[in-house]
Amino acid sequence: MSSEHGLHVMLSYHWDNKELVSKVYKVLKSRGIPVWMDIHGGISFNLFQSMADGVENAAVVCCFMTQQYQNSRNCEKELLYAERRRVSIIPCRLTRGWEPSTWLGLVTAGLVWIDFRETTDANVDVKIDKLIDQIRIVAGKQMSCFLPETPSIAQLPAINTTTSSNALYPILPVSIDVPKPNTSDVHNLVRASSIDSTKRSNTLTSRQHQSVDHTTLVQPTPPPVPPRPDKSLLRDRLLQMDEKKNLNETECCSDEKKENSVPLSGGKPDICEVSIQNQANARSIPDVLDVSPTIVADEKRRTGTVIDYSKFRRPPRIIGDDNDEISLSCPSGVAVSKTGLIYVADQQNQCVKVIPLLGSRKQILSRPFNRPKGVHVDELGRVLVTEHNRLLILDNELNLLKAIGDHGSKPGEFNVPWGVTTDSSSNIYVCDQMNNRIQKLDADGRFLLEWGYEGEHTGQFYYPHFISVSGNRVAVSDQLNHRIQVFDCFGNYHYKLGESGSEPGQFNCPFGVCIDGNGHIVVADHDNNRVQFFDAYGDVELVLDRESNPLFDFQGVHGLALTHDGGLLITDYKRNGKHRLFIFA
Image 1 (cartoon, rainbow, N blue to C red):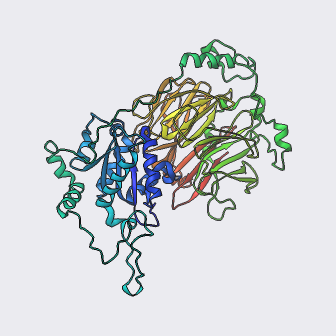
Image 2: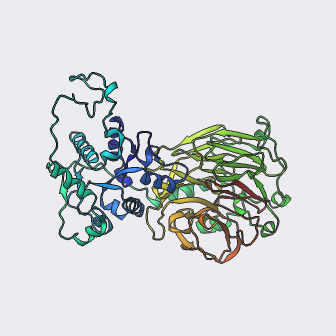
Image 3: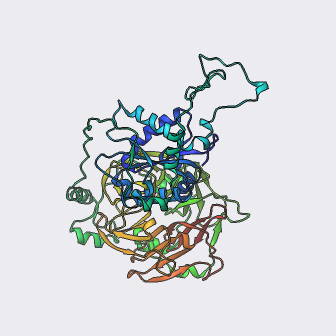
C-alpha cells in the first residue's frame, strides 16, 4: 500500500528479530517517514498480495540479515522480488562473525550496510540514525518526507533562523550558505547501492562489505529460550483427560481407543457449554431440522461424517452470486452446525454471517469481527473464530464467551491464525500461519502442544492454512509447499498428498481441507480453481472444476466444510471477481 506521503520504506526481516525491527519501525514512524512492516498493518486479507504491495510501493527495502533470514524462503522471495523491480536495498547486519552467502551474498554484494550487531538500548538510536541517513542518500529523492517544501517566491514567508517547523530536516535561511556534501562520497554511495546484479556476481569474490558503524560493543546475554513441552508428559495429560469420558459416548473413536488402550470419557469443560435447548430459546434463531434422518439413527459424531458423492451429481445452490440477497466479500472459513446453520467468515466485510443450510436465502444474523479467517462449530455447539492474532470462543449467536491468545510466537500466542477445528473431545487445533506451526489447545483454550516450523521437509510447514480432524487423523493444507500433510492427534507425521503442479493429484496453493470418517480427503486447490477428492489410499476420486461441469466455475476456492449428511460447503472468491458460497446438500 502506498502512503499518502509517497513511497515508503519496507522493513524485511525474519520473525526472530521482530522486536528490534519493531523498534526501528516505531522510530521511523515517529519521525514522519512512511514505513511498511507486515505485523504493523502491512498484511491484509490476502497475504501474498500484501507482500507484493509492500515491495511494489517501496522506495527502499531495509533487509535485516541473519542466518535465519538467509535460510527463509519467504525472505528470499521478498528480497529477490525487490531486486527484480530495481528497488534500492539497504542491508542491515545483526550477527557478528557471520557473512551473507549464496543468494543473499549475491544480492547485497557491494552495498553499504548498516551495523545493527550487538544492539543495546544505549546505542540503538544511534544505529537507527545511521539507517535514516542512508535511506536519505539512497531514496531521498523518491520520498516526499525528505524533500523540502518549496513555495513560490511571491508566497515565501519570512524565515525564522532560530526555529523550524520541520524537526527532522530544519529549513535553513536563504541567506546562509549551506555547505554541500562531498560530491564524490555521495556519488560512490549511490553508485554502490544501485550496482547491477550481474556486475555483483562477477566481482563477488573481490568486493569488501563497507561498515557504517565500527563501534566495538559488549555482547548482551540473550534471553533464555523457553523449553519446549515434553511430548510424553503432554500425552499422559491428554490420556488422563480422556479417562474422564464415558466409554459409550462415541463410536468413531474406536481406533483411537485401541491405540491408546484407554477408554475415552466424559466430563465437559466448566465454561462455554451451550445446550441445544438453550440454543433454540436464544433470541430468535430458528432450530432447523437435521439434514438427514440417518444422522439421528446412527448417532454418529461429526468426525464420523462420510462424503456422499451422489450430491455432486446435482447442481449446487450458490449464495452471493449476482442478484443474490446475501452479499459476501472475500469469504474464507465456513462451518455448519448440527442444527443446519452455516457460519461464514466474511473477511472484507469484517463479519461472520449466519445462513440457513436449507430453506430461506436470507441471512439470519451478522456480527462484526476483525477480519475473521477461520470458523468452526464444535461438539458443544460453540462457534470458534480466528481473527486478528487471537482465537474467539462464541455461543451460537456469536456472543463472546472467551478470547484466547495474543500476538507472538510463544505457546498460546498467534501470528495470523487461520484454520481452526476440534476433535471428538473438543480439543482445539489452530493453524498458526506465520509461525508455521499447529497449536493444540484443550476445550478451555489451555495450551497442550505444538508441532512444525518453517521448512519443506516432512512435519514442517510453509504457511499452514486450513486444518481438519477425523478420529485420530489430522489433515493440514501446507500452502506454499503445495501439499496436504496428515498427522495423528499428537503431531506425529503419517503421510502426505500432492506436489506442485496442475495435473490430477497435484496442487497449486491448497487452501481448505476436509477429512471424513473413511479417511477420504477433500482439498480446495486454490490457484488451479478446482476441488479434488482423494480416497483413503491417496488416489483421486473426483475433481470439481469448469471442465467437469460449467456450473463449477470456481475463481479461487478457499474454505471447505462437510455437512452432517455428507454434503460440502465451498467458499470461493477472486479479488476483482465473484464472491460466493457453493452448497452441495
